[in-house]
Amino acid sequence: MKKIVFILALFLLITPLSAQVTFGVKAGAGFSSLVQRRDGQLKSGGRFGYSVAGIADIRLYHRVSLRPELAFTSQGGSFYTQMEEDFPEDHNSHYYSIQIPLNVMYTFTYEDVKFGVGGGPALDIPLWGYAKVDGHHHDMSFGSKTTDNLKAIDLGVNVGINIEYHKFFFSVNSFCGVLNMSPLKKLGEPSLYQNNVTFSVGYMFRR
Image 1 (spheres, rainbow, N blue to C red):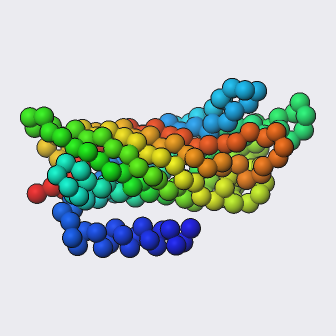
Image 2: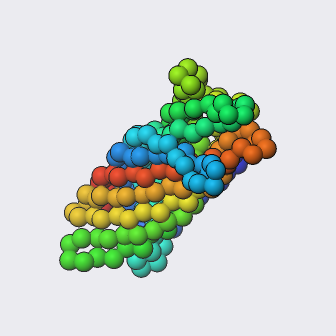
Image 3: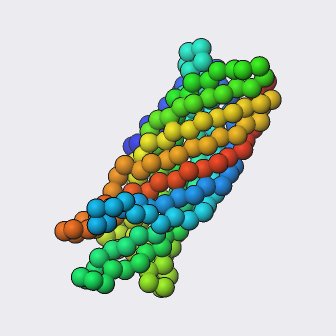
C-alpha cells in the first residue's frame, strides 16, 4: 500500500511540470452502503456522510483531462454476519477514510457552461471509525481479522458528472468497491462491498 501511495504522489508531482493544470476544492454530502448477497438477493444497509476534497485538473489532449482527487470521506453502512446458525449479528459501521480517485474526464462547453463526464480507478484507505454490533459499540481496527472490522484497503471504480459555470461547479460521483471488505471468509459467508454516491459543490481556481 505504501508503494501505491508513493507512486501516486510522485505522479501528481511530476505531471504538472509538463501539462496545463488547474486546482480546485469541493465539499458535499453523500450516501454510502455496504452491499452483500444473502439468500440469492442483494441487500444493503446505508448511512449518510460527507466528503471534502482537493482536485487537480490536468489537461491531456483537447477536451480530455486527468482529474485526480484527494478526499477525506465519512462512510460506512450496515450488514449481517452469520456467527451461529439462525443467529446473525447486526453490524453498523461508521468510519473515515482517504479516497484517491484518478478520473479521466471528457469536457465540452455549451454557451458559458462546461459539462464533464468521466471515470477511473479509485483507492480507498480507511483511517478510523467504530462498529455497532447488536447494540454494542467497538472501535474498528482495519485489517484485524474479526467480524467487527473491515479490510485495511479498498479498490474501486469511480464515475461521475460535472457541471461548471464561472469557476463554480456541481458534481455527482459514485464509488463502487470491487474488493471484498469482509476480513473473514467463512464457508457460506457473503462477500461485502462498499459503495457510495456523493453530491458536491466546488470551485476551480482558473485564471
